[in-house]
Image (cartoon, rainbow, N blue to C red; front, side):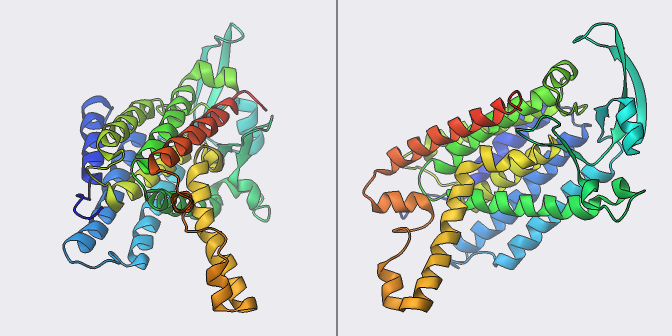
Length: 353
Protein backbone atom coordinates (compact mmCIF):
# COMPACT_ATOMS: atom_id res chain seq x y z
CA UNK A 1 0.00 0.00 0.00
CA UNK A 2 2.98 2.27 -0.51
CA UNK A 3 2.17 5.56 -2.17
CA UNK A 4 -1.37 5.82 -0.75
CA UNK A 5 -1.72 9.26 0.85
CA UNK A 6 -2.20 9.36 4.62
CA UNK A 7 -3.20 12.07 7.12
CA UNK A 8 -6.73 11.89 5.70
CA UNK A 9 -7.93 12.54 9.22
CA UNK A 10 -7.65 16.22 8.30
CA UNK A 11 -10.63 15.62 5.98
CA UNK A 12 -12.59 13.96 8.80
CA UNK A 13 -11.81 16.80 11.22
CA UNK A 14 -12.85 19.43 8.65
CA UNK A 15 -16.08 17.53 7.93
CA UNK A 16 -16.88 17.50 11.66
CA UNK A 17 -15.88 21.07 12.49
CA UNK A 18 -17.40 22.98 9.54
CA UNK A 19 -21.00 21.68 9.79
CA UNK A 20 -20.81 21.78 13.60
CA UNK A 21 -19.88 25.47 13.45
CA UNK A 22 -22.74 26.07 11.01
CA UNK A 23 -25.52 24.09 12.73
CA UNK A 24 -24.72 23.72 16.45
CA UNK A 25 -25.38 26.27 19.20
CA UNK A 26 -21.88 27.57 19.82
CA UNK A 27 -22.69 28.78 23.34
CA UNK A 28 -23.54 25.23 24.41
CA UNK A 29 -20.97 23.91 26.91
CA UNK A 30 -21.09 20.41 25.42
CA UNK A 31 -20.57 21.63 21.86
CA UNK A 32 -17.63 23.79 22.99
CA UNK A 33 -16.14 20.76 24.73
CA UNK A 34 -16.51 18.62 21.59
CA UNK A 35 -14.94 21.29 19.37
CA UNK A 36 -11.98 21.58 21.77
CA UNK A 37 -11.65 17.76 21.85
CA UNK A 38 -11.67 17.57 18.04
CA UNK A 39 -8.96 20.20 17.61
CA UNK A 40 -6.88 18.98 20.58
CA UNK A 41 -6.68 15.32 19.59
CA UNK A 42 -6.51 16.19 15.89
CA UNK A 43 -3.39 18.27 16.60
CA UNK A 44 -1.73 15.37 18.48
CA UNK A 45 -2.55 12.92 15.68
CA UNK A 46 -1.40 15.41 13.04
CA UNK A 47 1.93 15.86 14.80
CA UNK A 48 2.36 12.09 14.96
CA UNK A 49 1.62 11.65 11.24
CA UNK A 50 3.77 14.65 10.31
CA UNK A 51 6.81 13.13 12.02
CA UNK A 52 6.15 9.79 10.29
CA UNK A 53 5.56 11.19 6.80
CA UNK A 54 7.81 14.23 6.55
CA UNK A 55 10.54 13.42 9.06
CA UNK A 56 10.66 9.77 7.87
CA UNK A 57 10.55 8.56 11.48
CA UNK A 58 8.45 5.37 11.59
CA UNK A 59 7.85 5.69 15.33
CA UNK A 60 6.22 9.10 14.96
CA UNK A 61 5.44 11.06 18.09
CA UNK A 62 6.89 9.37 21.17
CA UNK A 63 4.31 7.34 23.07
CA UNK A 64 4.74 9.31 26.29
CA UNK A 65 3.91 12.59 24.51
CA UNK A 66 0.74 11.04 23.04
CA UNK A 67 -0.30 9.87 26.50
CA UNK A 68 0.45 13.31 27.98
CA UNK A 69 -1.80 14.85 25.32
CA UNK A 70 -4.57 12.34 26.04
CA UNK A 71 -4.25 12.95 29.78
CA UNK A 72 -4.51 16.70 29.13
CA UNK A 73 -7.74 16.21 27.16
CA UNK A 74 -9.11 13.89 29.86
CA UNK A 75 -8.41 16.54 32.51
CA UNK A 76 -10.20 19.20 30.42
CA UNK A 77 -13.28 17.01 29.85
CA UNK A 78 -13.42 15.77 33.45
CA UNK A 79 -12.91 19.20 34.98
CA UNK A 80 -15.54 20.91 32.82
CA UNK A 81 -18.14 18.19 33.37
CA UNK A 82 -17.59 18.14 37.11
CA UNK A 83 -17.22 21.84 37.94
CA UNK A 84 -19.03 23.82 35.21
CA UNK A 85 -22.32 25.27 36.51
CA UNK A 86 -24.08 24.63 33.19
CA UNK A 87 -23.55 20.86 33.48
CA UNK A 88 -26.57 19.66 35.47
CA UNK A 89 -28.94 16.71 35.59
CA UNK A 90 -32.61 16.56 36.55
CA UNK A 91 -33.74 14.57 39.59
CA UNK A 92 -36.70 14.59 41.95
CA UNK A 93 -36.35 17.13 44.81
CA UNK A 94 -36.58 14.37 47.43
CA UNK A 95 -33.62 12.53 45.86
CA UNK A 96 -31.63 15.78 45.69
CA UNK A 97 -32.29 16.44 49.38
CA UNK A 98 -31.63 12.88 50.45
CA UNK A 99 -28.28 12.71 48.63
CA UNK A 100 -27.30 16.32 49.44
CA UNK A 101 -26.84 17.33 45.81
CA UNK A 102 -26.12 20.97 44.98
CA UNK A 103 -29.41 22.32 43.59
CA UNK A 104 -28.90 24.88 40.81
CA UNK A 105 -32.61 25.52 40.29
CA UNK A 106 -36.04 24.01 40.97
CA UNK A 107 -38.57 23.98 38.12
CA UNK A 108 -42.25 23.01 37.97
CA UNK A 109 -43.08 21.54 34.57
CA UNK A 110 -45.95 19.78 32.83
CA UNK A 111 -45.71 16.04 33.41
CA UNK A 112 -46.46 14.66 29.94
CA UNK A 113 -46.06 11.05 31.07
CA UNK A 114 -48.42 10.97 34.06
CA UNK A 115 -50.32 14.22 33.48
CA UNK A 116 -50.58 17.28 35.72
CA UNK A 117 -47.46 19.12 36.88
CA UNK A 118 -44.25 17.91 38.49
CA UNK A 119 -41.45 19.67 40.34
CA UNK A 120 -37.88 18.83 39.39
CA UNK A 121 -34.53 19.78 40.87
CA UNK A 122 -31.69 20.56 38.46
CA UNK A 123 -28.56 19.54 40.34
CA UNK A 124 -24.77 19.33 40.14
CA UNK A 125 -24.26 15.64 40.83
CA UNK A 126 -21.56 13.09 39.91
CA UNK A 127 -24.13 10.66 38.52
CA UNK A 128 -24.02 8.19 35.65
CA UNK A 129 -26.37 5.59 34.18
CA UNK A 130 -25.69 1.90 34.84
CA UNK A 131 -26.84 -0.42 32.02
CA UNK A 132 -29.01 -3.51 32.60
CA UNK A 133 -29.97 -2.45 36.14
CA UNK A 134 -33.34 -1.20 37.41
CA UNK A 135 -32.06 1.43 39.82
CA UNK A 136 -29.72 2.53 37.10
CA UNK A 137 -27.97 5.53 38.62
CA UNK A 138 -24.48 5.40 40.09
CA UNK A 139 -22.97 8.21 42.15
CA UNK A 140 -19.17 8.45 41.94
CA UNK A 141 -19.32 9.76 45.50
CA UNK A 142 -20.24 6.24 46.64
CA UNK A 143 -16.60 5.26 46.12
CA UNK A 144 -15.58 7.69 48.85
CA UNK A 145 -17.40 6.25 51.90
CA UNK A 146 -14.76 7.71 54.25
CA UNK A 147 -15.88 11.24 53.24
CA UNK A 148 -19.46 11.10 54.43
CA UNK A 149 -20.69 14.69 54.30
CA UNK A 150 -18.81 16.05 51.27
CA UNK A 151 -18.51 12.92 49.10
CA UNK A 152 -20.31 14.64 46.19
CA UNK A 153 -17.87 17.56 46.26
CA UNK A 154 -14.82 15.30 46.36
CA UNK A 155 -16.04 12.77 43.79
CA UNK A 156 -13.75 14.41 41.20
CA UNK A 157 -10.93 12.38 42.80
CA UNK A 158 -12.57 9.30 41.24
CA UNK A 159 -14.34 10.90 38.27
CA UNK A 160 -11.47 12.78 36.57
CA UNK A 161 -8.94 9.88 36.63
CA UNK A 162 -11.71 7.61 35.28
CA UNK A 163 -12.38 10.08 32.44
CA UNK A 164 -8.64 10.18 31.65
CA UNK A 165 -8.55 6.37 31.55
CA UNK A 166 -11.54 6.25 29.17
CA UNK A 167 -10.10 8.89 26.81
CA UNK A 168 -6.71 7.11 26.64
CA UNK A 169 -8.27 3.66 26.24
CA UNK A 170 -10.84 4.47 23.55
CA UNK A 171 -8.59 6.76 21.46
CA UNK A 172 -5.79 4.16 21.47
CA UNK A 173 -8.25 1.33 20.74
CA UNK A 174 -9.62 3.25 17.73
CA UNK A 175 -6.04 3.81 16.60
CA UNK A 176 -5.37 0.07 16.92
CA UNK A 177 -8.50 -0.75 14.89
CA UNK A 178 -7.34 1.40 11.98
CA UNK A 179 -5.31 -1.35 10.33
CA UNK A 180 -7.25 -2.28 7.19
CA UNK A 181 -9.24 -0.27 4.67
CA UNK A 182 -12.52 1.09 5.99
CA UNK A 183 -12.52 -0.64 9.38
CA UNK A 184 -12.04 2.33 11.73
CA UNK A 185 -14.29 4.68 9.72
CA UNK A 186 -17.06 2.06 9.33
CA UNK A 187 -17.17 0.94 12.96
CA UNK A 188 -16.92 4.56 14.19
CA UNK A 189 -19.94 5.54 12.05
CA UNK A 190 -21.97 2.72 13.64
CA UNK A 191 -20.90 3.76 17.16
CA UNK A 192 -21.80 7.36 16.26
CA UNK A 193 -25.32 6.19 15.38
CA UNK A 194 -25.80 4.65 18.83
CA UNK A 195 -24.43 7.77 20.51
CA UNK A 196 -26.78 9.92 18.43
CA UNK A 197 -29.78 8.01 19.79
CA UNK A 198 -28.46 8.39 23.34
CA UNK A 199 -27.94 12.13 22.77
CA UNK A 200 -31.51 12.57 21.51
CA UNK A 201 -33.23 10.72 24.39
CA UNK A 202 -30.93 12.14 27.10
CA UNK A 203 -31.60 15.69 25.89
CA UNK A 204 -35.37 15.20 25.61
CA UNK A 205 -37.27 15.69 28.88
CA UNK A 206 -40.18 13.44 27.86
CA UNK A 207 -38.16 10.50 26.48
CA UNK A 208 -35.68 10.59 29.37
CA UNK A 209 -38.52 10.49 31.91
CA UNK A 210 -40.28 7.68 30.02
CA UNK A 211 -37.07 5.62 29.75
CA UNK A 212 -36.10 6.47 33.34
CA UNK A 213 -32.65 7.75 32.40
CA UNK A 214 -30.95 10.97 33.45
CA UNK A 215 -32.28 14.05 31.66
CA UNK A 216 -29.27 16.18 30.77
CA UNK A 217 -30.38 19.68 29.70
CA UNK A 218 -28.78 20.98 26.46
CA UNK A 219 -27.21 17.58 25.66
CA UNK A 220 -29.66 17.18 22.78
CA UNK A 221 -27.35 19.50 20.84
CA UNK A 222 -24.91 16.58 20.68
CA UNK A 223 -27.39 14.85 18.36
CA UNK A 224 -26.36 17.41 15.73
CA UNK A 225 -22.68 16.90 16.53
CA UNK A 226 -22.99 13.12 16.22
CA UNK A 227 -24.74 13.62 12.87
CA UNK A 228 -21.68 15.61 11.72
CA UNK A 229 -19.47 12.84 13.14
CA UNK A 230 -21.36 10.10 11.25
CA UNK A 231 -21.38 12.16 8.05
CA UNK A 232 -17.60 12.69 8.27
CA UNK A 233 -17.02 8.94 8.79
CA UNK A 234 -19.29 7.89 5.93
CA UNK A 235 -17.90 10.54 3.58
CA UNK A 236 -14.37 9.40 4.35
CA UNK A 237 -15.38 5.75 4.04
CA UNK A 238 -16.29 6.38 0.38
CA UNK A 239 -12.58 6.90 -0.37
CA UNK A 240 -11.24 4.58 2.34
CA UNK A 241 -12.96 1.33 1.31
CA UNK A 242 -10.79 -1.33 -0.33
CA UNK A 243 -8.64 -0.45 -2.19
CA UNK A 244 -8.18 2.73 -0.14
CA UNK A 245 -7.43 5.96 -1.96
CA UNK A 246 -6.50 7.65 1.32
CA UNK A 247 -5.70 6.61 4.91
CA UNK A 248 -6.92 8.56 7.95
CA UNK A 249 -3.66 8.08 9.89
CA UNK A 250 -3.42 8.87 13.58
CA UNK A 251 -4.88 12.31 12.79
CA UNK A 252 -8.21 10.59 12.20
CA UNK A 253 -8.16 7.49 14.39
CA UNK A 254 -7.02 9.18 17.61
CA UNK A 255 -9.58 11.95 17.07
CA UNK A 256 -12.47 9.55 16.38
CA UNK A 257 -11.67 7.52 19.49
CA UNK A 258 -11.38 10.60 21.71
CA UNK A 259 -14.69 12.03 20.43
CA UNK A 260 -16.50 8.74 21.04
CA UNK A 261 -15.12 8.69 24.60
CA UNK A 262 -16.06 12.34 25.22
CA UNK A 263 -19.64 11.99 23.93
CA UNK A 264 -20.19 8.82 25.98
CA UNK A 265 -18.93 10.53 29.15
CA UNK A 266 -21.05 13.65 28.59
CA UNK A 267 -24.19 11.51 28.06
CA UNK A 268 -23.40 9.47 31.21
CA UNK A 269 -23.07 6.29 29.11
CA UNK A 270 -19.38 5.61 29.81
CA UNK A 271 -20.21 2.26 31.45
CA UNK A 272 -21.74 1.12 28.14
CA UNK A 273 -18.49 1.73 26.20
CA UNK A 274 -17.38 -1.94 26.40
CA UNK A 275 -20.64 -2.87 24.61
CA UNK A 276 -21.01 -0.34 21.77
CA UNK A 277 -17.22 -0.10 21.38
CA UNK A 278 -16.95 -3.91 21.50
CA UNK A 279 -14.94 -4.03 18.24
CA UNK A 280 -12.39 -1.60 19.69
CA UNK A 281 -12.23 -3.61 22.92
CA UNK A 282 -11.63 -6.93 21.15
CA UNK A 283 -8.97 -5.43 18.87
CA UNK A 284 -7.14 -3.96 21.86
CA UNK A 285 -7.56 -7.12 23.92
CA UNK A 286 -6.14 -9.27 21.13
CA UNK A 287 -2.87 -7.31 21.28
CA UNK A 288 -2.67 -7.57 25.07
CA UNK A 289 -3.37 -11.32 25.01
CA UNK A 290 -0.90 -11.88 22.17
CA UNK A 291 1.91 -10.21 24.13
CA UNK A 292 1.03 -11.90 27.44
CA UNK A 293 0.82 -15.41 25.96
CA UNK A 294 4.03 -14.88 23.94
CA UNK A 295 5.97 -13.74 27.02
CA UNK A 296 4.62 -16.63 29.10
CA UNK A 297 5.50 -19.27 26.49
CA UNK A 298 8.90 -17.71 25.89
CA UNK A 299 9.69 -17.84 29.60
CA UNK A 300 8.41 -21.40 30.02
CA UNK A 301 9.30 -23.11 26.72
CA UNK A 302 11.83 -20.83 25.04
CA UNK A 303 11.84 -18.28 22.23
CA UNK A 304 11.52 -20.71 19.32
CA UNK A 305 8.42 -22.41 20.76
CA UNK A 306 6.81 -19.03 21.55
CA UNK A 307 7.40 -17.80 17.98
CA UNK A 308 5.92 -20.96 16.46
CA UNK A 309 2.91 -21.12 18.80
CA UNK A 310 1.45 -17.64 18.92
CA UNK A 311 -2.08 -17.15 20.20
CA UNK A 312 -3.06 -15.28 17.02
CA UNK A 313 -1.30 -15.44 13.67
CA UNK A 314 -0.91 -11.68 13.98
CA UNK A 315 -2.38 -8.96 16.20
CA UNK A 316 -4.57 -6.87 16.24
CA UNK A 317 -7.34 -9.37 15.48
CA UNK A 318 -8.14 -8.14 11.96
CA UNK A 319 -4.61 -9.11 10.87
CA UNK A 320 -5.19 -12.63 12.24
CA UNK A 321 -8.07 -13.02 9.79
CA UNK A 322 -5.97 -11.55 6.99
CA UNK A 323 -3.30 -14.18 7.70
CA UNK A 324 -6.12 -16.76 7.52
CA UNK A 325 -6.61 -15.74 3.87
CA UNK A 326 -9.90 -13.91 4.38
CA UNK A 327 -10.18 -10.87 2.13
CA UNK A 328 -10.02 -7.59 4.00
CA UNK A 329 -13.32 -6.38 2.50
CA UNK A 330 -15.07 -9.41 4.04
CA UNK A 331 -13.30 -8.86 7.38
CA UNK A 332 -14.38 -5.20 7.48
CA UNK A 333 -17.99 -5.97 6.54
CA UNK A 334 -18.27 -8.68 9.17
CA UNK A 335 -16.72 -6.45 11.83
CA UNK A 336 -19.21 -3.70 10.92
CA UNK A 337 -22.11 -6.21 11.16
CA UNK A 338 -20.93 -7.22 14.64
CA UNK A 339 -20.60 -3.50 15.47
CA UNK A 340 -24.22 -2.91 14.41
CA UNK A 341 -25.41 -5.80 16.61
CA UNK A 342 -23.48 -4.36 19.58
CA UNK A 343 -24.92 -0.88 18.91
CA UNK A 344 -28.45 -2.32 18.88
CA UNK A 345 -27.78 -4.14 22.18
CA UNK A 346 -26.56 -0.83 23.64
CA UNK A 347 -29.72 1.01 22.60
CA UNK A 348 -31.89 -1.87 23.88
CA UNK A 349 -30.40 -1.34 27.37
CA UNK A 350 -32.51 1.81 27.57
CA UNK A 351 -35.53 -0.47 28.08
CA UNK A 352 -34.14 -3.79 29.33
CA UNK A 353 -33.33 -3.55 33.02
